[in-house]
Every structure is written in structure tokens, then in C-alpha cells.
Length: 220
Image (tube, rainbow, N blue to C red; front, side):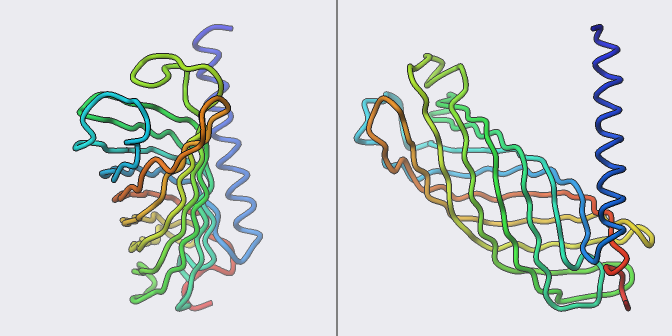
């Protein structure tokens, strides 16, 4: 199969996904969409028990994730909304400016929002969030050195989020979110004891586009 064929199949898959999301959302009271999320921040390490070189004074983590978003009130004139983000996640950890480890996996986030401003044009909201992420160490290993067995990185935490939903007609809305989360990290391995590896603080930026259901319109 040529590179052109791969691009055609990718575009067809994206188009099919968008069509399915649009059809599913218009038949329900909730809104369904896709999101892209980027986050970064420092890590308070607990890795002193491990023989890993480098300075932990600049231990930091970043992530990028994308996937499916569902929201109960993107546009409707309702105080409370629940949003779920479920998707793929790539996490990269750096120590002293050098990549320590990269993980590929998934994430599940729950946001409980309260609409402080609601109109036909937009919804401004804020509220608490709870997030769980899990990933498996990639083939590059630790500091570029492959390691035997399987190493899993688990993060769990919560924080606050605020956002604005800008309505683009009767069926769509663009959503912009900024948040802060404090999370615990755990490393689980098949060859060494599992440890609490740190606590990270992340600021995240999220963009999502929702296809709104018939019941998710202002004034209805």
C-alpha cells in the first residue's frame, strides 16, 4: 500500500468518525465531540530510592492527549454540566532537561462544571475535575536505555477547570478549557518493586469541538 493510500484511508476514517459523532449527538440530549489536550508542569519526586542519575531539581512532565468528549450541557440554559474526556495519551518525563521516560496509554477525565454565564452565543463555566491516566513505557526505555519487562506509569488526581463554549450555529460548539491538577504518580513493574514515583502539578489547555444534540440548545 502506498503512502497516498494510507492518507486516503486516514481521511476516510476521520470523516466516518465525524459523521458517527454527529449522528449520535443529534439523536440525544447530550453533546458528543473530539478533543485535543496539552499539559505540562513540575514533579515533586520520590525517586531517591532508585539508582537513577541526574538532577531531580528540574524533574518535569508533559502530556498530549486526544479522544472522545461527551458533555451534558454545552449550550443549554442549565447551571450544571458533566463532561467526560476519554482518549489516547502520550506522557514524557524529563530530568535535567533530558528525556527520562515516555509512556503511551490512555486517560479518563471527569469535569463537573457550573455555568456562571449562559447565552445563545456562549457558555462560561468552572468547576472541579478528577483524572486518571495510565501508560506503558515505550521502546526507548529509561534515559534511552531499554529495560526488560513492562513498566507502567499510573497517575491519579484532581483540580479545577474553567472554560468557554462558543456556539457555532444550531448544531456545533467550539470549547476552550484551561485547568490545574495535582496528581500522584505510581510506577508498576514486572521486574522491580512498585513505587510512588512523585506528585505532579500540571496546567492543561484543552480544545474540543462538540456536535450538539437536539436537547442541548439554549432555551430548550
